Length: 195
Length: 195
Image (cartoon, rainbow over all chains, first blue to last red):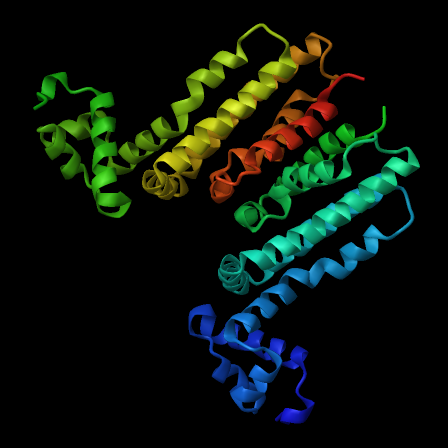
Protein backbone atom coordinates (compact mmCIF):
# COMPACT_ATOMS: atom_id res chain seq x y z
CA UNK A 1 0.00 0.00 0.00
CA UNK A 2 1.36 3.35 -1.08
CA UNK A 3 0.14 6.50 0.59
CA UNK A 4 -0.89 9.42 -1.60
CA UNK A 5 1.70 11.74 -0.07
CA UNK A 6 4.70 9.51 -0.84
CA UNK A 7 3.57 8.46 -4.34
CA UNK A 8 6.28 9.10 -6.98
CA UNK A 9 5.97 9.27 -10.77
CA UNK A 10 8.36 6.32 -10.97
CA UNK A 11 6.02 4.16 -8.85
CA UNK A 12 3.11 5.08 -11.09
CA UNK A 13 5.08 4.20 -14.24
CA UNK A 14 6.08 0.82 -12.80
CA UNK A 15 2.48 0.10 -11.83
CA UNK A 16 1.37 1.17 -15.31
CA UNK A 17 3.78 -1.36 -16.83
CA UNK A 18 2.36 -4.12 -14.59
CA UNK A 19 -1.18 -3.21 -15.58
CA UNK A 20 -0.29 -3.09 -19.28
CA UNK A 21 1.28 -6.52 -18.95
CA UNK A 22 -1.82 -7.97 -17.30
CA UNK A 23 -4.61 -6.28 -19.28
CA UNK A 24 -3.02 -5.22 -22.56
CA UNK A 25 -2.98 -1.69 -24.02
CA UNK A 26 -6.65 -1.68 -25.05
CA UNK A 27 -8.03 -2.49 -21.60
CA UNK A 28 -5.55 -0.94 -19.13
CA UNK A 29 -7.10 2.01 -17.27
CA UNK A 30 -5.92 4.63 -14.80
CA UNK A 31 -8.29 3.09 -12.23
CA UNK A 32 -6.46 -0.26 -12.58
CA UNK A 33 -3.15 1.50 -12.01
CA UNK A 34 -4.45 3.35 -8.94
CA UNK A 35 -5.89 0.09 -7.56
CA UNK A 36 -2.51 -1.65 -8.00
CA UNK A 37 -0.90 1.14 -5.97
CA UNK A 38 -3.71 1.30 -3.40
CA UNK A 39 -4.35 4.99 -4.09
CA UNK A 40 -7.22 6.96 -5.61
CA UNK A 41 -7.14 7.65 -9.34
CA UNK A 42 -7.05 11.34 -8.40
CA UNK A 43 -3.58 10.74 -6.94
CA UNK A 44 -2.39 9.37 -10.26
CA UNK A 45 -3.86 12.36 -12.10
CA UNK A 46 -1.95 14.71 -9.76
CA UNK A 47 1.24 13.42 -11.45
CA UNK A 48 -0.10 12.80 -14.95
CA UNK A 49 -2.89 15.16 -16.02
CA UNK A 50 -4.49 12.69 -18.46
CA UNK A 51 -4.47 9.08 -19.50
CA UNK A 52 -2.73 10.15 -22.72
CA UNK A 53 0.02 11.91 -20.73
CA UNK A 54 0.53 8.77 -18.66
CA UNK A 55 0.70 6.51 -21.72
CA UNK A 56 3.22 8.88 -23.28
CA UNK A 57 5.37 8.84 -20.14
CA UNK A 58 5.25 5.03 -20.05
CA UNK A 59 6.32 4.88 -23.71
CA UNK A 60 9.06 7.43 -23.17
CA UNK A 61 10.45 5.42 -20.24
CA UNK A 62 10.50 2.26 -22.33
CA UNK A 63 12.16 3.96 -25.31
CA UNK A 64 14.79 5.51 -23.04
CA UNK A 65 15.85 2.23 -21.43
CA UNK A 66 19.14 1.99 -23.34
CA UNK A 67 19.69 5.76 -23.40
CA UNK A 68 21.98 5.96 -20.39
CA UNK A 69 24.54 3.58 -21.85
CA UNK A 70 24.28 5.23 -25.29
CA UNK A 71 24.64 8.70 -23.79
CA UNK A 72 27.71 7.50 -21.86
CA UNK A 73 29.36 6.18 -25.04
CA UNK A 74 28.59 9.50 -26.76
CA UNK A 75 30.62 11.53 -24.25
CA UNK A 76 33.59 9.14 -23.94
CA UNK A 77 36.95 10.35 -25.18
CA UNK A 78 38.28 7.34 -27.16
CA UNK A 79 38.57 6.90 -30.95
CA UNK A 80 35.27 7.74 -32.64
CA UNK A 81 35.09 4.70 -35.00
CA UNK A 82 35.23 2.23 -32.09
CA UNK A 83 32.71 4.30 -30.11
CA UNK A 84 30.29 4.53 -33.05
CA UNK A 85 30.51 0.78 -33.57
CA UNK A 86 29.88 0.16 -29.87
CA UNK A 87 27.03 2.70 -29.82
CA UNK A 88 25.28 0.93 -32.74
CA UNK A 89 25.93 -2.55 -31.29
CA UNK A 90 24.59 -1.44 -27.88
CA UNK A 91 21.44 -0.03 -29.48
CA UNK A 92 20.92 -3.22 -31.50
CA UNK A 93 21.48 -5.44 -28.43
CA UNK A 94 19.05 -3.40 -26.32
CA UNK A 95 16.31 -3.46 -28.96
CA UNK A 96 16.83 -7.12 -29.69
CA UNK A 97 16.68 -8.02 -26.02
CA UNK A 98 13.39 -6.15 -25.62
CA UNK A 99 11.89 -7.79 -28.70
CA UNK A 100 13.03 -11.38 -28.13
CA UNK A 101 12.98 -11.70 -24.33
CA UNK A 102 9.48 -10.33 -23.86
CA UNK A 103 7.65 -10.38 -27.20
CA UNK A 104 4.22 -9.73 -25.65
CA UNK A 105 5.39 -6.58 -23.89
CA UNK A 106 7.20 -5.56 -27.05
CA UNK A 107 3.92 -5.81 -28.99
CA UNK A 108 2.17 -3.80 -26.27
CA UNK A 109 4.75 -1.05 -26.51
CA UNK A 110 4.55 -1.09 -30.30
CA UNK A 111 0.85 -0.22 -29.94
CA UNK A 112 1.67 2.66 -27.60
CA UNK A 113 4.51 3.84 -29.82
CA UNK A 114 2.18 4.02 -32.81
CA UNK A 115 -0.19 6.22 -30.79
CA UNK A 116 2.46 8.74 -29.81
CA UNK A 117 4.48 9.58 -32.89
CA UNK A 118 5.82 12.81 -31.35
CA UNK A 119 7.44 10.81 -28.53
CA UNK A 120 9.10 8.53 -31.07
CA UNK A 121 10.31 11.45 -33.16
CA UNK A 122 11.88 13.08 -30.11
CA UNK A 123 13.49 9.73 -29.22
CA UNK A 124 14.95 9.39 -32.72
CA UNK A 125 16.17 13.01 -32.72
CA UNK A 126 18.03 12.35 -29.47
CA UNK A 127 19.68 9.25 -30.90
CA UNK A 128 20.64 10.94 -34.18
CA UNK A 129 22.13 13.86 -32.20
CA UNK A 130 24.29 11.36 -30.27
CA UNK A 131 25.56 9.87 -33.54
CA UNK A 132 26.29 13.40 -34.79
CA UNK A 133 28.36 14.10 -31.66
CA UNK A 134 30.47 10.98 -32.23
CA UNK A 135 30.91 11.86 -35.94
CA UNK A 136 32.02 15.37 -34.98
CA UNK A 137 34.57 13.91 -32.55
CA UNK A 138 35.82 11.61 -35.30
CA UNK A 139 36.30 14.52 -37.70
CA UNK A 140 38.29 16.39 -35.02
CA UNK A 141 40.39 13.29 -34.42
CA UNK A 142 41.09 13.00 -38.16
CA UNK A 143 39.46 9.57 -38.22
CA UNK A 144 36.39 10.59 -40.23
CA UNK A 145 36.28 12.69 -43.40
CA UNK A 146 34.81 16.19 -42.98
CA UNK A 147 31.10 16.20 -43.83
CA UNK A 148 27.79 17.73 -42.75
CA UNK A 149 27.44 15.79 -39.51
CA UNK A 150 23.66 16.24 -39.23
CA UNK A 151 23.06 14.69 -42.64
CA UNK A 152 25.66 11.96 -42.13
CA UNK A 153 24.28 11.08 -38.68
CA UNK A 154 20.76 10.71 -40.06
CA UNK A 155 22.14 8.57 -42.90
CA UNK A 156 24.00 6.32 -40.44
CA UNK A 157 20.87 5.93 -38.35
CA UNK A 158 18.65 5.13 -41.33
CA UNK A 159 21.21 2.83 -42.96
CA UNK A 160 21.23 0.74 -39.77
CA UNK A 161 17.41 0.63 -39.44
CA UNK A 162 17.62 -3.12 -39.97
CA UNK A 163 19.29 -3.36 -36.56
CA UNK A 164 17.19 -1.05 -34.41
CA UNK A 165 13.86 -0.25 -36.05
CA UNK A 166 11.11 -2.42 -34.48
CA UNK A 167 9.70 -2.91 -38.00
CA UNK A 168 12.58 -5.38 -38.48
CA UNK A 169 12.19 -7.20 -35.15
CA UNK A 170 11.14 -10.44 -36.87
CA UNK A 171 14.59 -10.63 -38.51
CA UNK A 172 16.57 -10.17 -35.29
CA UNK A 173 16.54 -13.84 -34.35
CA UNK A 174 18.09 -14.80 -37.69
CA UNK A 175 21.45 -16.61 -37.37
CA UNK A 176 22.79 -14.07 -39.91
CA UNK A 177 21.77 -10.99 -37.90
CA UNK A 178 25.21 -10.54 -36.34
CA UNK A 179 27.20 -10.92 -39.56
CA UNK A 180 24.68 -8.73 -41.41
CA UNK A 181 25.23 -6.02 -38.82
CA UNK A 182 29.00 -6.24 -39.25
CA UNK A 183 28.62 -6.16 -43.04
CA UNK A 184 26.62 -2.93 -42.95
CA UNK A 185 29.00 -1.49 -40.36
CA UNK A 186 32.06 -2.21 -42.54
CA UNK A 187 30.43 -0.41 -45.47
CA UNK A 188 29.44 2.62 -43.37
CA UNK A 189 32.84 2.85 -41.70
CA UNK A 190 34.48 2.80 -45.11
CA UNK A 191 32.16 5.66 -46.12
CA UNK A 192 32.97 7.72 -43.03
CA UNK A 193 36.74 7.14 -42.85
CA UNK A 194 39.08 9.96 -43.79
CA UNK A 195 40.98 9.06 -46.98
CA UNK B 1 -15.80 -15.76 -71.42
CA UNK B 2 -12.58 -17.71 -71.65
CA UNK B 3 -12.56 -21.22 -73.00
CA UNK B 4 -10.67 -23.88 -71.07
CA UNK B 5 -8.38 -24.70 -73.99
CA UNK B 6 -7.10 -21.15 -74.46
CA UNK B 7 -6.71 -20.34 -70.75
CA UNK B 8 -3.22 -19.04 -69.92
CA UNK B 9 -1.47 -18.76 -66.55
CA UNK B 10 -1.29 -14.99 -67.11
CA UNK B 11 -5.10 -14.75 -67.43
CA UNK B 12 -5.51 -16.72 -64.23
CA UNK B 13 -3.08 -14.47 -62.37
CA UNK B 14 -4.87 -11.33 -63.59
CA UNK B 15 -8.23 -12.77 -62.53
CA UNK B 16 -6.73 -13.72 -59.17
CA UNK B 17 -5.65 -10.11 -58.68
CA UNK B 18 -9.19 -8.90 -59.47
CA UNK B 19 -10.67 -11.37 -57.01
CA UNK B 20 -8.17 -10.43 -54.30
CA UNK B 21 -9.06 -6.78 -54.84
CA UNK B 22 -12.78 -7.47 -54.51
CA UNK B 23 -12.86 -10.04 -51.70
CA UNK B 24 -9.57 -9.60 -49.82
CA UNK B 25 -6.97 -12.30 -49.14
CA UNK B 26 -8.99 -14.09 -46.46
CA UNK B 27 -12.08 -14.67 -48.62
CA UNK B 28 -10.74 -15.03 -52.17
CA UNK B 29 -11.18 -18.60 -53.45
CA UNK B 30 -10.20 -20.54 -56.55
CA UNK B 31 -13.93 -20.91 -57.35
CA UNK B 32 -14.25 -17.09 -57.44
CA UNK B 33 -11.31 -16.90 -59.84
CA UNK B 34 -12.75 -19.60 -62.09
CA UNK B 35 -16.15 -17.83 -62.08
CA UNK B 36 -14.51 -14.52 -63.11
CA UNK B 37 -12.92 -16.33 -66.06
CA UNK B 38 -16.04 -18.34 -66.89
CA UNK B 39 -14.20 -21.65 -66.55
CA UNK B 40 -14.39 -24.58 -64.14
CA UNK B 41 -12.15 -24.55 -61.09
CA UNK B 42 -10.59 -27.73 -62.50
CA UNK B 43 -9.22 -25.62 -65.37
CA UNK B 44 -7.49 -23.34 -62.89
CA UNK B 45 -6.04 -26.33 -61.05
CA UNK B 46 -4.60 -27.64 -64.34
CA UNK B 47 -2.25 -24.63 -64.28
CA UNK B 48 -1.78 -24.27 -60.53
CA UNK B 49 -1.93 -27.57 -58.59
CA UNK B 50 -3.13 -25.96 -55.34
CA UNK B 51 -4.53 -22.76 -53.92
CA UNK B 52 -1.17 -22.24 -52.17
CA UNK B 53 0.69 -22.57 -55.50
CA UNK B 54 -1.65 -20.00 -57.06
CA UNK B 55 -1.20 -17.55 -54.18
CA UNK B 56 2.55 -17.97 -54.45
CA UNK B 57 2.48 -17.27 -58.19
CA UNK B 58 0.34 -14.17 -57.62
CA UNK B 59 2.80 -12.92 -55.00
CA UNK B 60 5.78 -13.67 -57.22
CA UNK B 61 4.21 -11.71 -60.09
CA UNK B 62 3.62 -8.74 -57.85
CA UNK B 63 7.13 -8.82 -56.38
CA UNK B 64 8.65 -9.08 -59.86
CA UNK B 65 6.83 -6.03 -61.26
CA UNK B 66 9.93 -3.79 -61.22
CA UNK B 67 12.33 -6.63 -62.03
CA UNK B 68 12.53 -6.06 -65.76
CA UNK B 69 13.75 -2.49 -65.42
CA UNK B 70 16.13 -3.47 -62.60
CA UNK B 71 17.49 -6.40 -64.60
CA UNK B 72 18.02 -4.08 -67.57
CA UNK B 73 20.03 -1.61 -65.46
CA UNK B 74 22.10 -4.52 -64.13
CA UNK B 75 23.34 -5.51 -67.58
CA UNK B 76 23.98 -2.00 -68.95
CA UNK B 77 27.55 -1.02 -69.73
CA UNK B 78 27.84 2.48 -68.21
CA UNK B 79 29.68 3.58 -65.05
CA UNK B 80 28.69 1.40 -62.11
CA UNK B 81 28.11 4.21 -59.54
CA UNK B 82 25.46 5.89 -61.71
CA UNK B 83 23.83 2.53 -62.47
CA UNK B 84 23.75 1.50 -58.82
CA UNK B 85 22.15 4.83 -57.90
CA UNK B 86 19.56 4.44 -60.66
CA UNK B 87 18.94 0.81 -59.69
CA UNK B 88 18.22 1.80 -56.07
CA UNK B 89 16.11 4.82 -57.08
CA UNK B 90 14.09 2.66 -59.50
CA UNK B 91 13.47 0.07 -56.79
CA UNK B 92 12.40 2.77 -54.33
CA UNK B 93 10.09 4.44 -56.88
CA UNK B 94 8.46 1.12 -57.81
CA UNK B 95 7.84 0.12 -54.19
CA UNK B 96 6.62 3.57 -53.25
CA UNK B 97 4.22 3.67 -56.18
CA UNK B 98 2.76 0.31 -55.19
CA UNK B 99 2.37 1.36 -51.55
CA UNK B 100 0.98 4.86 -52.07
CA UNK B 101 -1.11 4.52 -55.24
CA UNK B 102 -3.02 1.44 -54.12
CA UNK B 103 -2.65 1.04 -50.34
CA UNK B 104 -5.43 -1.55 -50.08
CA UNK B 105 -3.83 -3.84 -52.64
CA UNK B 106 -0.47 -3.24 -50.99
CA UNK B 107 -1.91 -4.47 -47.67
CA UNK B 108 -3.39 -7.48 -49.44
CA UNK B 109 -0.05 -8.37 -50.94
CA UNK B 110 1.65 -7.87 -47.59
CA UNK B 111 -0.61 -10.60 -46.19
CA UNK B 112 0.33 -12.92 -49.04
CA UNK B 113 4.01 -12.08 -48.72
CA UNK B 114 3.97 -12.99 -45.04
CA UNK B 115 2.51 -16.38 -45.95
CA UNK B 116 5.18 -17.26 -48.48
CA UNK B 117 8.53 -16.42 -46.97
CA UNK B 118 10.42 -18.64 -49.44
CA UNK B 119 9.09 -16.56 -52.36
CA UNK B 120 10.27 -13.38 -50.65
CA UNK B 121 13.69 -14.84 -49.92
CA UNK B 122 14.12 -15.84 -53.56
CA UNK B 123 13.02 -12.34 -54.61
CA UNK B 124 15.57 -10.74 -52.29
CA UNK B 125 18.32 -13.12 -53.44
CA UNK B 126 17.65 -12.08 -57.04
CA UNK B 127 17.86 -8.39 -56.15
CA UNK B 128 21.04 -8.79 -54.09
CA UNK B 129 22.62 -10.74 -56.97
CA UNK B 130 21.85 -7.80 -59.28
CA UNK B 131 23.54 -5.39 -56.88
CA UNK B 132 26.54 -7.76 -56.72
CA UNK B 133 26.79 -7.71 -60.52
CA UNK B 134 26.87 -3.91 -60.60
CA UNK B 135 29.47 -3.84 -57.78
CA UNK B 136 31.63 -6.32 -59.68
CA UNK B 137 31.43 -4.13 -62.80
CA UNK B 138 32.41 -1.13 -60.68
CA UNK B 139 35.47 -2.93 -59.32
CA UNK B 140 36.51 -3.84 -62.87
CA UNK B 141 36.02 -0.23 -63.95
CA UNK B 142 38.20 0.94 -61.05
CA UNK B 143 35.27 2.96 -59.67
CA UNK B 144 34.68 0.78 -56.60
CA UNK B 145 37.27 -0.53 -54.16
CA UNK B 146 37.91 -4.30 -54.33
CA UNK B 147 35.78 -6.13 -51.78
CA UNK B 148 33.77 -9.32 -51.31
CA UNK B 149 30.91 -8.39 -53.63
CA UNK B 150 28.41 -10.82 -52.08
CA UNK B 151 28.86 -9.33 -48.61
CA UNK B 152 28.94 -5.75 -49.91
CA UNK B 153 25.83 -6.28 -52.04
CA UNK B 154 23.89 -7.62 -49.08
CA UNK B 155 25.09 -4.67 -46.98
CA UNK B 156 23.98 -2.17 -49.66
CA UNK B 157 20.60 -3.84 -49.86
CA UNK B 158 20.10 -3.89 -46.09
CA UNK B 159 21.45 -0.37 -45.58
CA UNK B 160 18.78 0.89 -48.01
CA UNK B 161 15.93 -1.09 -46.40
CA UNK B 162 14.34 2.23 -45.46
CA UNK B 163 13.69 2.79 -49.16
CA UNK B 164 12.40 -0.58 -50.33
CA UNK B 165 11.34 -2.75 -47.40
CA UNK B 166 7.53 -2.64 -47.06
CA UNK B 167 8.02 -2.44 -43.28
CA UNK B 168 8.94 1.22 -43.90
CA UNK B 169 6.07 2.01 -46.29
CA UNK B 170 4.48 4.43 -43.79
CA UNK B 171 7.57 6.66 -44.05
CA UNK B 172 7.59 6.84 -47.86
CA UNK B 173 5.15 9.73 -48.08
CA UNK B 174 7.38 11.87 -45.84
CA UNK B 175 8.59 15.08 -47.50
CA UNK B 176 12.10 14.07 -46.35
CA UNK B 177 12.02 10.66 -48.06
CA UNK B 178 13.86 11.86 -51.17
CA UNK B 179 16.63 13.74 -49.33
CA UNK B 180 16.96 10.87 -46.84
CA UNK B 181 17.49 8.50 -49.75
CA UNK B 182 20.19 10.75 -51.22
CA UNK B 183 21.84 11.06 -47.78
CA UNK B 184 22.13 7.30 -47.37
CA UNK B 185 23.25 6.95 -50.99
CA UNK B 186 26.05 9.51 -50.52
CA UNK B 187 27.33 7.61 -47.48
CA UNK B 188 27.20 4.24 -49.27
CA UNK B 189 28.86 5.58 -52.40
CA UNK B 190 31.64 7.03 -50.27
CA UNK B 191 32.04 3.57 -48.72
CA UNK B 192 32.18 1.80 -52.08
CA UNK B 193 34.40 4.24 -54.01
CA UNK B 194 37.97 3.27 -54.78
CA UNK B 195 40.38 5.53 -52.84
